[in-house]
Image: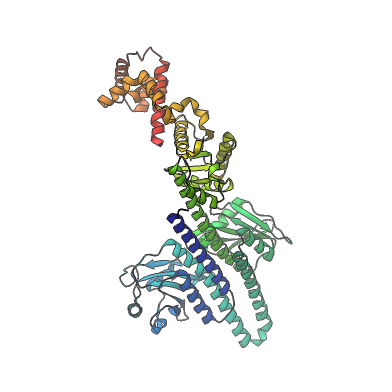
Length: 593
């Protein structure tokens, strides 16, 4: 069996991505245990160092003196690095805290975009620190510190690394928050025996929230879906939980078995989602029926992934709201994982589609093995669909086609800049109509879908015919339909390369002299006469459309009549009109090839 280097690279990348996310889930679970603050800080740094893979990592917190102090590190050379202490408005850490967003520099010492602290710069030299990435540790809207990943050589940090470290920092902030709450509770218990019962209740609430968080993490580690997470939240908190996508549309809803609550209308949540996204905090409102709605945005770094809405008949307490916010961190990781898997799957599907197109007609043994590994029988892929929309890019259309291809054991992707899918079909007309209706519904935009049956695995020919037929359909004014090329059999001479000689002969007989004249003289009489007939032989309308003076247009029409030997004022030659129209459609079809 022939090896596929590209496939192996893609597989390794996918495996590495899954390993990183699995490590992130496992790390998140280990950080949920209450413990000493210093132990938690060191554990955060240790896991971050293993996860991100830079030369060294460290964590700094804002102290009571208002300065940013290093509290834990992994991979550092000098023990004096933990003495680093700088004002919060200085250095990369100052920018991270001020903006509560990730920042990075290729070369810290040479950077002019940050305010340098001399003492810290000396430690930078000792540690040979060059490239530095910092992400904030945010607890209840307050930046309490920053987590840093550093390399000893100049480099750029990729969006995937930033999102991964940001997602980890969200979990680290939860663990840090838990550790601080635990220490506060323990100190209060030790110092204020008289408040023992109140502190005991507080710890119980924190442990309940912690138990929910562990249950959520366990659900994800056990292969759970976003629906499983939403159901667990609904069961633990009561009421109903709705997961919203990036656009604010409901993706799924789960109800508590004991105390379900009606979900709000999509329009009622739009403002709440926007407020939660801007503030980074959970927002709560109560409607006229006394139903409380809480919404928390799902973020991974600067990326907005959706929102979580919780509805119930009683006002929530702060701990429940914090639990809802923590659940968004879990969902963010799960969505990132699903996106990574989906993107890798889409890339592989597109590559296989391109291989079959380029190698057709016929299928190689290696291609059969690769398609069979995805549960697809390449020998049954007998219909090629090409989709085009005036308002959507081929990339967006391809994403929608990928969803359909997965359900129908087909392949989808972009081929020669066109959104394309190949699949098995027992009824081509019905299949094309179903795909068109699905695309129309999911994209909300007009789309033209043209299908052509692939004979003897000649997908390339079927693709060419479907693409050129789609161009003809659009030139005829169709912008929203699903059809096979058979509907346009009358125009087959335009889009079928095997019938090009028939079209050549007809055009030579009908408008050949005019085409020759335009080619020799560099004139444009063919398009002028075609526009004249397109505007129902109306001289004034044609002149306006071509931005010509009426006299100029008449001179051109007279010249065309002389070349063809016809009187455009009197004659109404059907063959001439048909020749001009077929020439226009040929130009449109050629432009799509």
